[in-house]
Structure formats: structure tokens, C-alpha cells
Amino acid sequence: MKERRVKSLPVATSKQCWAVIRELLRPRRTQAIVATVVLVAAAAVGLLGPLLLGEIVDRVDSRTGSITWPAVALLGAALGEALLAALGLTLISYLGQPILASLRERVVAKALRLPAAQIERGGRGDLLSRLGDDIAVVSEAVVEAFPPLAAASLTLLLSFAGLATIDPRLTLAALLVVPVQVWAVRWYAKRAGPAYAEERKVSGERAQAILDVVGGAKTIRALNLAGTALPRVEARSVSSIAAVVRTIRISTHFSSRLNAAEFVGTASVLVVGFFLVDADAITVGAATAGALLFIRNFDTFNIVLGTIDEANRALAALARLVGVLQVPDPPSPEPHDGAHVSLTNISHAYDGGPPVLHDIDLQIAAGERVAIVGVSGSGKTTLAKVVARFHEPTSGTAHVGDVALVTQEVHVFAGTLADDLRLADPTASDEALRAALQAVKADWASLDTVVGHGGVELTPAQAQQLALARLHIRDPQIAVLDEATAEAGSAGARLLEQAAASVLDGRTALVVAHRLTQAARADRIVVMDQGRIVESGTHKELVAAGGTYAALWRAWSAER
Ligand SMILES: Nc1ncnc2c1ncn2[C@@H]1O[C@H](COP(=O)(O)OP(=O)(O)OP(=O)(O)O)[C@@H](O)[C@H]1O
Image (cartoon, rainbow, N blue to C red; front, side, top):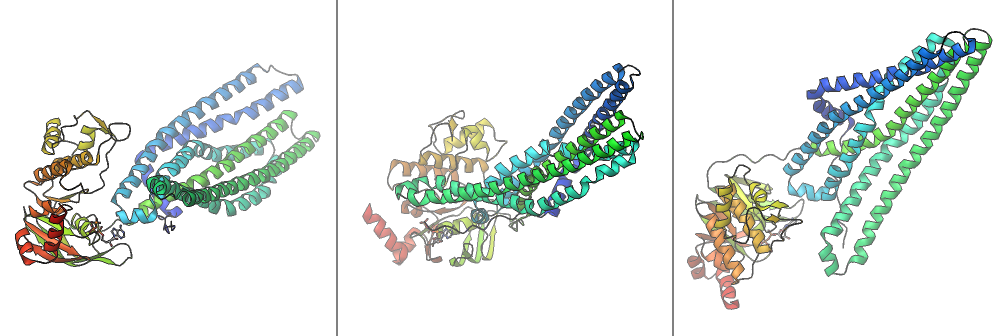
């Protein structure tokens, strides 16, 4: 198997990410402010702890006054901080989850608008990993990284102010920590962003490789290709592991640099505190409170820096999610009214490949039923998909009104048959659903039958009936049918032909005819060869003309 070169979906810049976050936060601004205020209050109450402990030390040291009230207040402060922090976290989760949900919805909606070719090119695995793993990473960060980040700014400010009120020289001693931290953060910042972006990217590639193997399991087994397919997954896994190890190593080195900073800072505050007490400039309690404030401050700072690690990972994940939103929307096909189809001078090539449709001119009148025939690879499916607006043609103009397509690949969505059918029209009544099942002669199931994953497995013919029933409910003016080939003359083929005929009744139709009996009954037949329409006429006319169709018909009749 030759490895396909995958051009990934784009990754957003931080500016684009912030724009999307701001937009998602806007309708929830009040909620965001309340949550931040509560978290900040929790941090402020938490700072009372060291000050009260200092008070207790002084009272014990000077043996004056009781320690009951500071001890009770200390307990109160601890409880207050815990309650406020819990409330803040809950508020943040309530804020974050709907934001994430709308982000996910936007990305899914965007993915559905993307041309099929673009998703194939970018890799479905990549898209799935963005919608799965990346959302999970962002989601975790919203709960675990944002609250400490929000609370920390005030904690830092207040505790430096607290140190300054005890003695400005303690603040100066504490500030010794700054150069060490700047060094640690700069070291980290240079490495973390790219490492996390790489980790997320490689994880998407691994998902793609796994999806390729799982999706192609039958082919791989049939051709006995496990020996070549598995090493590819393995290679991706190995690069994924290497990328994770790289980020863990960066994060561990970062922690040890932060520990060094803590050591320098604590030592200098303690030494300065010692000299200040010695010189009777401050009490032992004040020095204790100062050291505790510093340590607490440092803990906060460490938490912040620790969450920067997580936030970095989340930003990389967010950039991949928002990246999907940056793909420009394909030009939406101009809306056209009416039940007729008009293609003028259409050519089409798949993603940089050679043209597979050339100079197609095709007019289908309202209510007309046209069959396309031609040998395999002549371009029938491509033409059907261009008419159905599934592919935008590379050149030429297509005027097609309200159209729906039934393809060979029918996806049966998991759930009851009623749910599945209602995808075509969520407002359809049970009566309408039953009428649709009757129209396609699907007497094998009721509306409550559970189908899809975990339910009744449908035969290919039944899945086709389901697709035709959906078309009946969707009720477009123009229908394009490119059904699975059923064995000619079989009961299944006859049944599907009847079902299709009943669903197409009263509509303009373009049918890719895999069985020529189906073509013979159409109002008109167009014959394709190597991407061109080479003949057009009724069955009788074309047989009489003795051209390509007549030859196909002779071969078909002889086979039967
Ligand atoms: N997704 C694709 N990407 C690239 N090339 C494609 C793609 N789909 C079809 N082609 C190519 O376009 C040409 C026309 O294919 P198309 O499927 O439209 O023919 P067809 O007449 O419907 O064939 P069949 O009867 O086998 O379904 C073929 O050369 C095919 O290899």
C-alpha cells in the first residue's frame, strides 16, 4: 500500500483563537465576571491564613492575650476559602461546558459544510481527533487551568502587598526570586509551544492511521496486507510516544527550575526575616507571617506556571479546533428554483487530477426521468454528484433546483427506524414515515425497530430501501439516484426498481442505471464514455441507432 500524502486541516493562529473565545464568552459575560470575582475572593480569604498564624505566634511568643480568636478566625478563613473555591470551580464548569459545546457544534457544522474532497484530503482521522481528543484537552483545561490562573493574579498582588506592610525589606528579599523565575519561564516558553503543537499533530496522524486500518480492515485481510499495514500504525504510535515523552521532559525540567527559584526565594526571606527580628525591626510572628505568605505566594505561582503547561497543551488543541473554522466556506451553490436541471459546458477533475468529465451539456425538463449508462469509470457517478451539488464542477455552469441524492453508500444511523427516517425531515409525522416505508415496500420493519450499530443489521437492499424512504420524506423536486448494483433479474433488484420508481413518481430524476432494464424504462437515456456524453435518446432510438448503447444492450441481453 502506498501511503497517501495527507495535507492536514489548518491550525489557527492565537489571534484567531482569542477572537473565537471572545465571541463565545460575550453572551455569558456576567456569568464569567461573577465566577472570576468568587475565585478572587477565595484567594483573598486564603491570604488571611498566614497573617493569623503570625498573630498566634506573637501571642504565644509574648505570652499575652488568648489565641482563641485568631485560631477560630483561622478555621473560618480556611472554611471560607474552601467554600468560595468550590463555588468558583462550579461556576467555571457551568460557564465552560456550554462554551465548549457551542465550539464543538460550530466545528461539526463547519465539517459538514466542507466539501467531501477537503475532508478526505485533510484526513477523517485528523478531524475526528480534533473533535474528540482536542475537545477533551480543552475541556479539562477549562476546569483545571483557568480557575487558578484567574485567582492567582490577585493572590500574588495581595501577598506582595502583605509582605510590604510587614516590612518592605521582606518584599525586596522575596523579589530575588524573580530573575530565577524569569529564567525558568523563558527556558520553558521557548520549547513548550512547538512541542505541544507537535504532540497534538502527531496524535491526529496516529488517529488517521488507525482509522485507515480499521476502515480498510476487510481489504487488508482480503489482500493479506496486515504485515504492511500494522507497521504503519506502529510507526505513528512510536512518533506519538516520542512527542509525548518530549513534552513530559520539558515539563519536568521546568518544574526543577521552579524548585530552584523557590529555594532561592524562601532562603532569602528567612535570612532577611532573621536579621529583622534580630534588629527588633519586626516581631517573630511578623517574620513567620512573611515567610508563610511567601511560600503560599510561591505555591500559587507554581500552580500558575504548572497550569501554563496544561494551558499550552489546551491552546494547541484549541488552535486545531478553531483551525477547522478557518477553512473558507465553499462558495454555496447559487440557489435555483424549479424542477429542471441545466448543465452547460461542465468539466470536472478530482483534486488536481486529470479531468474526468468533459464539456457536459445536459438539460433535463421538469418531471423528466433520465438514465445515465456507460461502462465502469466512464464518469456516471461523478456526473450524478455534480448534478446533486455534491461536487462543485471545476468549470461550467450548473443550474439545479431543490435536489437530493441517494448514493451507493447508505449510512444507517444508529437508533430507531423512525429516528433514522426523521433525519430527512424532523417534523414528519409517524403517518408520513409509515407511508414512506410503504412506498418503498419495506415491510420488514416497524418504526420502533432499532437499526444501525447495536440493532438489526440491514441487508444492502434494505439499506437502499431505507435511503429511498428518506428521499420520499425529504420530498425534493429533483432526485438523483446512484444505487448499489443488485444482481440483475434477482428479486432484490426487482424490488428496488419498484421502490425507486414509486419514490421518483412526480419528480425530475437522474438515475445512474446499473441495470439496463432500468434505463430502458426512462424517458431518455444519456450514454457516457470517457467522461463525455456520447449518445442521448430513448431506448428505441438508441437501439435503432446501433451505437454504443445498442452494443451495451446487445451484450446485456445476451448475458441474460
Ligand atoms: N474520489 C475520486 N477521486 C479521484 N478520482 C476519482 C474519484 N472518484 C472517481 N474517480 C475517477 O473518475 C473517473 C470516473 O469515475 P466514476 O465513478 O464517475 O465512473 P462511473 O462510470 O460511475 O464508474 P462505476 O460504474 O464503476 O461506478 C474514473 O477514472 C475514476 O477513477
